[in-house]
Image 1: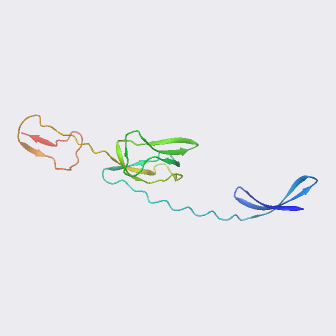
Image 2: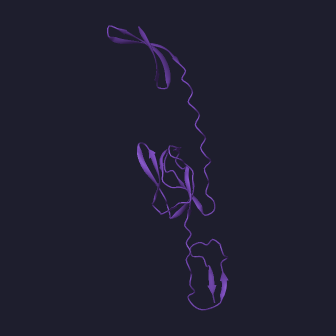
Image 3: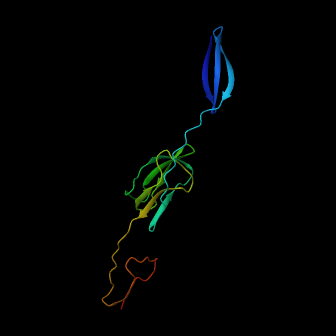
Length: 159
């Protein structure tokens, strides 16, 4: 008596009949059937881009996000592990590059990323450093409140 089985090999589905002869099985392969199409993956959410004062943390290589260790609004320290990325069977840490606040997480666990994909967006911590006058005098120049300055720029003049 022949038994019928459906098997899948390398994505192709086959209907086979196996007949027992003298205690050993002899497979008889039938013509391949078209396999059912795989369900379409849900579209990934649009990645948030970095705004003013923010910057993206990018995937260093293609791989799969194994674990997301941060959430929006969380404060992180420079060097803190933010995510685990699996690439070529190796687990790689994606680290914070500065003390910052996480503004957006653009990936979820199990998601595949390409090298350079923005996996999250962070805003570097703002530092408030008081500047003390070296001597008494009158302020003749003062940089505008909120103005961006570069290293070495004059921000105030006291006469």
